[in-house]
Image 1 (cartoon, helix red, strand yellow):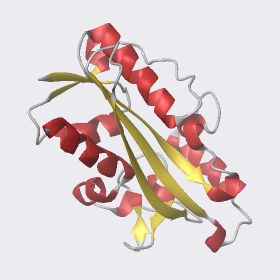
Image 2: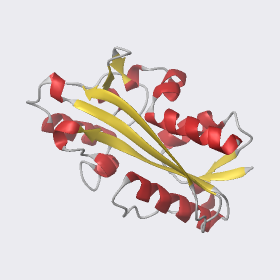
Image 3: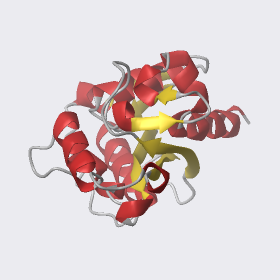
Image 4: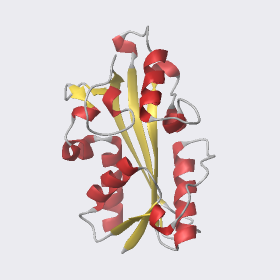
Length: 195
């Protein structure tokens, strides 16, 4: 079954293709259909995921999977949140976003640097789907004082997981996919789709 992935983020694409490889799905990125990114003007992760899935499904005629995910830092009242990918402004990059986060937490003690990754995953059978499948995954951790690790993308080099004693960017892909926010949301989705 062909499904479009409503994302142009290469890191996400690689993760989704690996996570969905077990199911009988042919996951095709929306870019293969020249679908432009949706305007994410929702006020929550779930709203943005629905906007993206509906947009991709409407323009491709296929079922669509979309996620909206980001980092919530407690000291910053949940920021960057839904603005995670554009936290450092209009021409945001992972490096600039990470630098901005570190500068905002410069004087903050380690025990106050608690944070979590959130992932809201939406599967829509068609653009008018009144009951899309919605799955949520959360991954708790801390923000480090400096980046560490080469794997992953986004805030992974700053996201320290106490149970593993390393950052998300230091985990192997298969290990990360089992324990991450996206991995947890995807496990729920796979379970619901296999029914």
